[in-house]
Image (cartoon, rainbow, N blue to C red; front, side, top):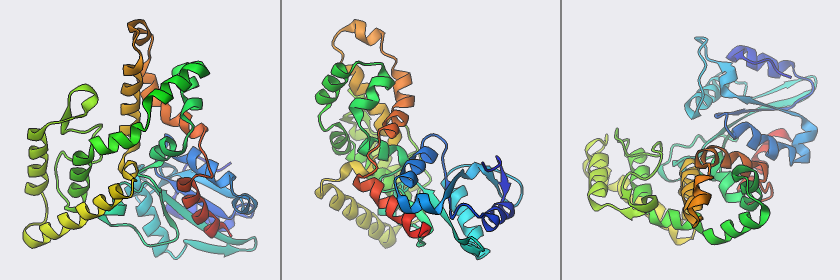
Length: 316
């Protein structure tokens, strides 16, 4: 088992000296990312035969001895390994490769993806969103909410296509979040928010025209661009989002934390008996549902296969 932390140079030495494993995967988060990639790696015989190790980026300090998590830290490590010419190495045991797995976030719409086979972006916005897209909700709700199977089935059936509806209801907010990223706006509008800030009412589904106007103004007024360039970027982003929705794929734009919070509120509202709500531990569900969904992830689903194929390409 690898030791807890390495310096960057030490990490590369670890790879060079390895005789048992060929693929070294670095992930950005510690909530679901490592388990997510473990499930995908273990599902591929090619990767399993090659051998693999999975590291959180916080296990690898930078050249100043500092450790940090997140997407920027993973990409900084990628840049270092690329500059050192060590994205792929060979030793007496064969080829050794490094994979850097990061959240796609808005990059499919706003641009900025690193064009390297060693940088693997999630198919959905993040690993938690993968869990909501491809996890078995009936099975996950039973341990997460302490429900019997019959009640879990009843609850899930009552939800219908809840994530698609959320994407439709929150489209104005999603558009502004993606625009803020593409336009490099320094504002309160963005994917980091816990929920839509332009909706109010029950479960934040009622669009507030004044809040939406304020969000649009904030994105525009704090953007690094203006004039023709601003208009061009705005049109490009909105056109791309429109194509995603036209293809019926709006839920692919949702962050995992949005899905967790909204699912929790939807389930709570489905309990008609006030006594059920008293016994309902919504905080636990909101914090744990993505983890339980990941336990019941369909590793053969489209989103999972998208990453599995890239892992195989590096391990082969």
